[in-house]
Image (tube, rainbow, N blue to C red):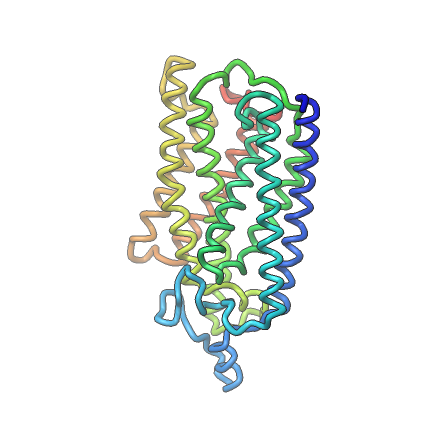
Length: 331
């Protein structure tokens, strides 16, 4: 195939990925809508007891394995389990076509396919989807997170296609370095994993409030179907533990590349500054998770702030502010 044909195929696969992810969102919605509360919670409700069967970190929580923690698959009707399997299949197919977007783009341009904002953001979203799929396969109870991960993914993909798309072409001179494969690749991996971690913390804040109120949060069926707060907290923490050293390496690799390209390791360029701020926030989150008085909701808020910093770094710093990383914008 010619370069133009490969570029066209990449664009087609991008649209296909958005379609498959959108169908997966519908299937995940059906799984949540047609499911029912966990058996232990139904028994308490039937007995007139408003209390939930478990509290964050309590003995009833099964952890990240899904098990029977709020929103488990145990005892669900076969039709609901089928919706879950369909959703996972659609999301997996979407991830395959999503990977194809980058592979064909790289073949068309004969380089690594993350040399501009369109490619970088597309790769970040792919990492987030793969991270979710790995967790959901290992821990079926976490499939109920699918709606809350895939819906932002669809919105992100549409925004990427509308506002960041550029035709494939050669790398700008500043990016023609072997460090591109090291620094940018690890930044993509770290950001994608932090994306999932931040969503898990947002859901933890909602679910923990629901549990603290004895299961009464406007009689929210959707919240009742989420994994337990303890499970969500563990997902957020474990993904952050994985992403933090990756992001640390990305910052260090960027400094080494900066010395090679510009003759200094650090210059407080806006991109460098906000990458360091993100590192500090995630270091604070991991420290807060082990500090009395900061465990639980305070630590989760720090993680949510970390996600906000990462998104700000990606969008505002790259597209609005000026600096030595201006070549990373939409051009």
